[in-house]
Image 1 (cartoon, helix red, strand yellow):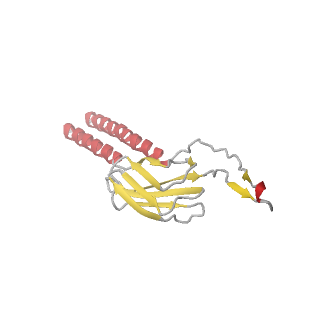
Image 2: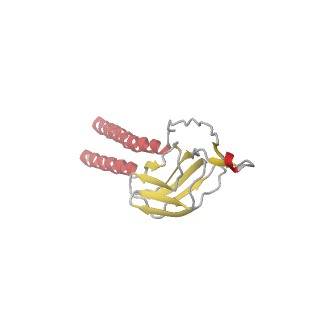
Image 3: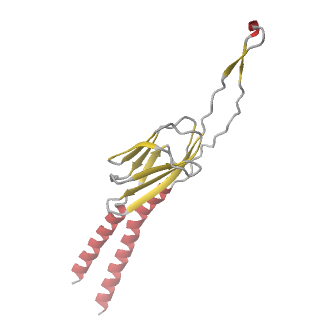
Length: 187
């Protein structure tokens, strides 16, 4: 009887730990969370820990909360790619994604990034009444300091939970087996 209970509890532990690890979490992205880019962006790429379902969705919102037009979204294995119709302009953007994990649970997340393209000074022609005095004068630009410290992202929290949940399940299972064994021996 005790052996059957131990086998059942061990089996439930194995099932619980694989269930906790079945969630598909975001591994990384391009651009990454909190990144400030100094060049135009034509696409956003999300790299997931596991397989991404074809029913997954990807949205990019500008700083006004308006959806940015995506020309296409492709999903292949653990990678979701969104191609923009036009390159993104300077500003802050929020990427929102939704997918379904291997255990059929919906999973979603979001992260933000910013674009601060610094334009090079342009040369302009200044023409006086007499064409002999033609000069070129550069337009002055301001120096912009970019904080390159990345912000923490939500997908790191999912990764910690994916590691922590099986450990907690194991501790509770072992405690349950010990308590059950103690109760059965006591009788």
